[in-house]
Image (cartoon, rainbow, N blue to C red; front, side, top):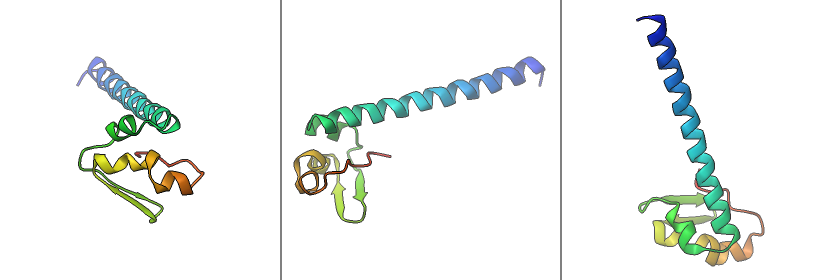
Length: 87
């Protein structure tokens, strides 16, 4: 493999890492805006249809429809702290 090919592979990996980081930041921003504005539909769209969420072993949500409870259900009423998010 030539030096040019090595540099191209390295740059390709760096670009991929930057794109991944940007997408993660985008998801976190969409999540924060959705939760802060109590937008249950926008919150649910961040998660996969078949997701399973466990928040501190106390709150469980299965499937996209249940994730709406993150902003509309008892969890948001009883816990003043922010939900950690879809990570």
